[in-house]
Image (cartoon, rainbow, N blue to C red; front, top):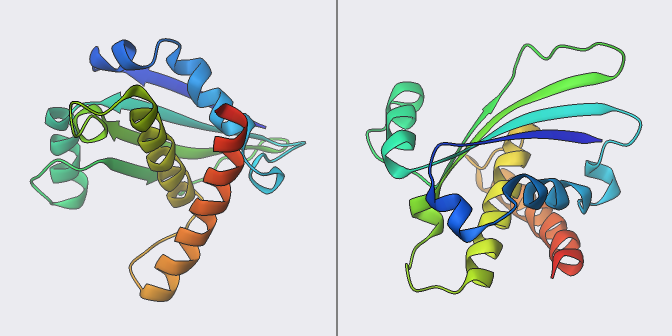
Length: 153
């Protein structure tokens, strides 16, 4: 089971997604069983942010002085306590998700779901530096997305 704590520092998120915490919990609930971690307690934190804030984090932790759509911070010193595991933190920029600004709500949510899944896989150790790793990660993203989108739409 995945426990997700959602924190929002950007007010526009709640204008697009009314029940934010429920929305992200539903995404995790509809992951393929392989990623639901049944009989285990996995947790992560999700920060819903803006370009301004994510740019600061990107500069501080990746030495890139520009905003980005998502940052993932795997918790490398994983604490384990009777099947409990903290995966890490994900930060998503509202401004990136809301491009173009005239996109409909359905497209916005689909983009958020895909981006969240991408960040989640980074927490699990997936990477896309090498082409073969990119292909492997993309394949997993698509599997998870198909599982989620069938049940949420």
